[in-house]
Image 1: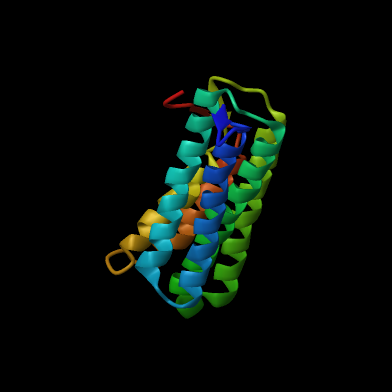
Image 2 (image 1 turned 90 degrees about the vertical axis):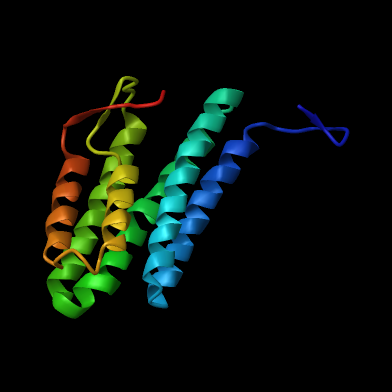
Length: 177
């Protein structure tokens, strides 16, 4: 593609969305540390949107690359593994269950990273193996938006179940491909 008289590498565009995904995940952690619950959860939901768009843009432009795939996984482990784990720890576990909450949050992040590593070496085109980390992290962010209406005990159960499902052999259909 020509842009300003120079050739523009279309592989950059999906990486811009992926980088936005990572940046929003980072902001979620910052907002959590400042105790801005809704803003933190909103940043994770924006990360979900960016993660969805990076894949769509890459497929549309036929601009997929190994670099983009690796950047996507690194971004996803921050935005959908670490960020939700920190948010849930700060807003739920820190007051009710500090030690065990840290362990559950760590397990969630670890299982998310393992799920992404496995995804990167599998060649499945019709389904995901294990629940995608994007779903797990996005779901935990959505739950957090109802923090004042949900008993705190729901969070460790949901987080533990999602952690196990991420590393399970459950076949989850790919939607929107």
